[in-house]
Image (cartoon, rainbow, N blue to C red; front, side, top):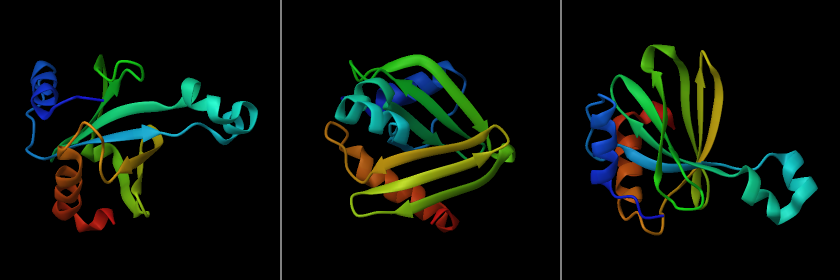
Length: 136
């Protein structure tokens, strides 16, 4: 998974979003409990989804990442701050669980404290958390 911050910034500019410094993190959606029970370890192949989440003052941009190539896909979702009811990071041993409640529903992510191939993950996560302590 080798996406660098310059690639993320370029993608954001292409969709008319002004990138913030140290504001992107890798996140992933874990397989559902039902799929884990049915397919066991193989459920990751079908159900795990990777995203880059970029936090700005106006929105959170969720960028799709191909689970095979590790490259950004040309698909994204923008969640405007005025549509977000709650953002919560729950600290775990090796990762945070991120819950975003918005008008569109609830999104749950696992945000690792570090990521292979993304040296910026740890610093950016700390930056995002320090900007808004109410996330914790």
